[in-house]
Image (cartoon, rainbow, N blue to C red):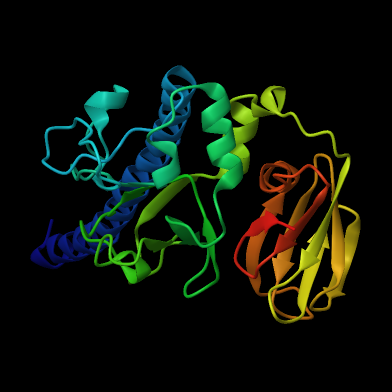
Length: 279
């Protein structure tokens, strides 16, 4: 081969290497992301299983030993307590935040009642878009992703205990999984402990302004004026919005939450603008 031919071969090899290395890097990044996401789903199931066994969720680990520390709601995932691996695909510890009502219960009845009584302003909460409206959760687990640092509304942790979860971007690669109250309620068969005798609850809007609802018997976005009412029937979930287009979600309420709020049994409750209480 002439020197020119050799030079051409080397140029081609260089071009191929230049294309291959970034591709391998992207494939590795994708593999790490998907494996962490899959494992975090297993963490979610492990926490639901722990709740079904102990009728509570564990406290957070704050001293790094993997065991829950009593009284601590935000910190690292207590991986030894729930019997699961400690780190994500990038060898970083998982962050963890849990609602205060769910760490001290001891029976199915008290745990299910605690789930019902969680108000829409309690923590932790998660927004499923950048800067979007947050929704209360029973528990949140976070991975800091490839850059090993929490991004967006997730930093500094735990600050306001409001978190964000959305499609990764150049500046956001956190992975977030949640246990929401409705999921846990169904997963742990809480309906078997329900004692409500009301097939329908009348909800009085006492929040001081108009709201819009959708869900249940409200197939379209419906305005509920201040001091007027709407209905929630057995098994239904009602979404509450702050705008007429039903694009700004503020709260989610369930029939079981309505049942938990009705302490005098008259099938009437009130929406305060933040939570449900007896009317």
